[in-house]
Image 1 (cartoon, rainbow, N blue to C red):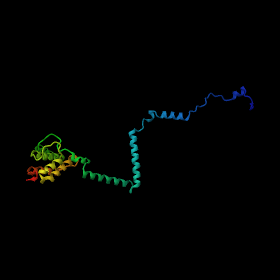
Image 2 (tube, rainbow, N blue to C red):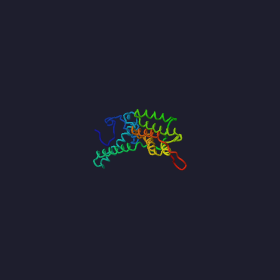
Image 3 (cartoon, rainbow, N blue to C red):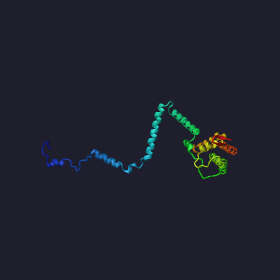
Image 4 (cartoon, one colour):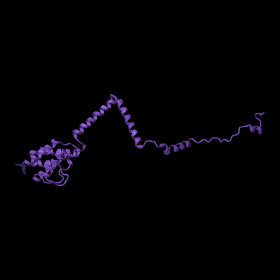
Length: 231
């Protein structure tokens, strides 16, 4: 019989359980976290991750979704009301674009009339008629306006001058052809609108320029003197 509190004899020691197990090791918390982060940073765990572009697109859609939700809460009719407003705004922008033309219209008066080598008025008229026959009204208008100015130069009613604009040509020609001054200024504006303002031309636009060209061919200039115009 083994008595408690007494010395442990060989017999008692033989009865105790024998084990070769080593006490478990404990890893500090910070070291364990760093080891986990290193392991998870391996490319093996990120093969199916979205690309940076895809993540940016996802965030953009999330932002737009939140914005639409916020706007629908503050707009009468909710999401349907927002869609109606968007459609109305788009229609207004389209109407303004069609009425006013391209924003490039700001550069209207700065554009040059001739953009290539010297050609005769007859050559410009031939090109204009060819463009008109093909339905290229913008090019037809441009060539007819160039024919008008070149014809005035050939008749010495305008001095040949490189770099002249359509507005300048109209203002100078109106001095010797005052009866057609308004038509010349209108033709210059038309040329600038279709060339630099992005406005579309049509058969009516070209027809007015052609009529002006023919009328100027028959028009008699007013000679100017020191005291003013004289017949």
